[in-house]
Amino acid sequence: MIQLNNIVKRFNIATPDETTLFDGFNFQVESGEFVSIIGSNGSGKTTMLNLICGSLRQESGEILIDGRDITHLPEYRRSAFIGRVFQDPKMGTCSSLTILENMALADNKNKRYGLGRCVSKKRTDYYKSLLAECDMGLESKLGVQVGNLSGGQRQALALVIANMADIKLLILDEHTAALDPKSSEKIMEITDRFVRERGITTLMVTHNLRFAIEYGSRIVMMHEGKVVLDLKDQEKKNAKVDDLLKIFNSISIEAGNSL
Image (cartoon, rainbow, N blue to C red):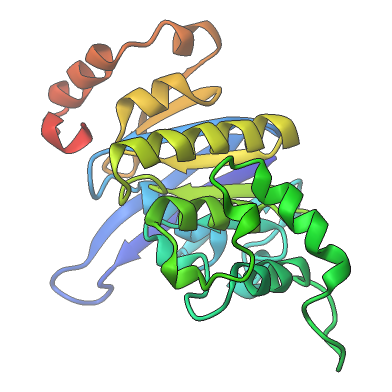
């Protein structure tokens, strides 16, 4: 489903600080997989997501989704089939608009805009049904400005919005990192339910090793632009947090950054 072939990515090119993160990097994800990506800061996790989404460009190599070469496709074109939820809850929604207005904008994604109204009252019940799946009372707050929601509520809304379009790929970039423990647990429950019910291919970067083990179908650990661990099927089911911490320690990664 996703193929990264011979990716080369450098930073600070033609300066004394030039570094190469990916040098002939290859990575594949099958359709329907839910992959948890772990690793230290600077290991390449978020850079890989940014390359897939188009917010960064590689120096060479190709990226394919469902066999389609998207290497030179601009970010706004990729957003038609890639949904993304960021670490900061503020980034996936518009604070000054209501929940209803945010959902109406998402509902009209990839559609032609005319002079008609963006918000359709006929779709209100549909929006409520989507929000009710979150079990956070959002369906009764359609008229509330999103800026007045809690971080957990806002991230739940961002998840709903990211899944409203007919996307092929869901990108979760540390989407629980900015939340309190209770909200983090709730958002992961919602995430897991959405992914399983919709069968969406998902890449989730996380520093929470327990979440990586408990959720998804595959764990990938990255270090210095390389995949150093790839677990799925029974190997993933047998994985323990302590086992992953030992691997972090063995490659000189500070374990405290991963808790």
